[in-house]
Length: 300
Image (tube, rainbow, N blue to C red; front, side):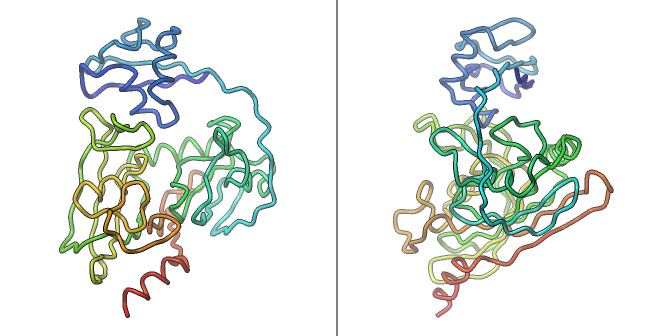
């Protein structure tokens, strides 16, 4: 049984809506089922799905362990940027899912890591997500750090939570971005489409800094720096200020003339303090070929 402790920053939000917005792998319907089956507590008392949150009242969610699944190790090539006994930094390609999920148990980064690392992956996130400290979307490419043991996992997760990790992305967005800016808007599940994220009242804090790098006709290449790491954060934030990411099939602009296999968003730089040595480490990767190809066409 996994227990998640949450502290609401807003009141009068339905508990199932609040939980699904806070825990990435819990849908609203699943949160409702957990509440109605006695696995959700607020202020120490079991509550039902329609219970409304109270400010700063501790919410405890009990999530039963998933049925044991045989996630196969698969001999899939990995672009390894750095590796030692505690962690591994990989450059994930566009189109690769980070971890197995319903209907998609093969070809993921986890399948590849199980082959490469054997049994040397942290077990904190369970059988489906061994070693996974943070994620990037299927069609976003770039750097991820993976923990090989629980001690490293806990320390890396703490740095992410406390906004001490350095995460810089490169994105091509629609329209002209004229200067630096910050988007500070809460993100949660869209009330209209549970598969999408949106700017919602009562959502989780989300902060993205951005600055323009290069301007093209109808597009701008920008750098984004994350303070927080919410699901689809950069994609949702840039759409919210009128600059959706080029090639984004979910949050993109209708008049986007760039046709790619996914959003032009790349996790270029990743920095953190090594959990064992205490040394600050920073890694960067070059823009992938498909991204450079689009930029070169825009430069002509």
